[in-house]
Image 1 (cartoon, rainbow, N blue to C red):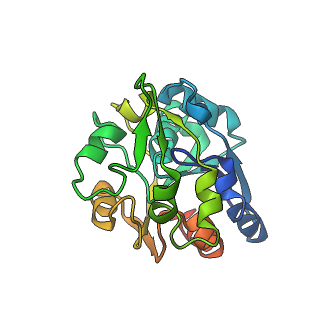
Image 2: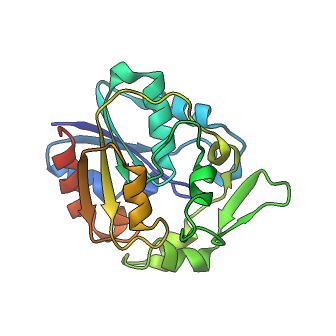
Length: 224
C-alpha cells in the first residue's frame, strides 16, 4: 500500500482533502494533507512551499498535487527525489522547464481562471471571487457556496516562479473532463510525455464531488 501526501491548489488548504483521506485509509493506504505556506496571502516562495512538503515526508511517498499544487510537488520532488515514489497531477498545472504557472495560464486563451480573481493593490497577493468560484471550481459539488467561502488569498510570487530542473521520477495525471477552470485539452497538453493517465467526469474539485472515485483512481496510479 502507498503513503500519500496530498497538496492543495491555490486558495485552498488541507481541508480540501478531508473526504478523500478516509477513503484512501479504507483502501489500506496512509494519507495526509498539509497547508502550504502562503495561505491568507502571506508572502512566501515556491521554494518555501516545496521545503514544507519535504519536511512533511514520512518515508517513501506519493505526492499528489491539485491545480497549482502541481508546481509545489514537483519542486519538492526535485529537492528530495530519494523520498518521493511518484508524482500524481490532479487537474493540475504541470511544470514545463522555464515556464511559470502564470506563463502557462497566459498560454491558454480559453482558461476559466482569467478574470476569476482579484489582485491586491500592492500586487503581492490575489484572491478568488467567491461567487465566481462557486461555478468555476465547485459547480458539481454538494455545497458550492460553503466551499467557495473557505477559499483564501494567495501570494503572487509562487505563481510567477518557473522551475528549471524537473525530477526524473514516475509521473501520472488525472484529468477532470468537466473542469471549468483548466480546459481538458490544456490539461492533456501539459501532460505530454506522461503515459499513466486517468479521467474523472468531474469539475475542478473531485476531492469534493467524487472523493471515493478519486481515492480509487489514486490507488490505481500509485504503482503505475
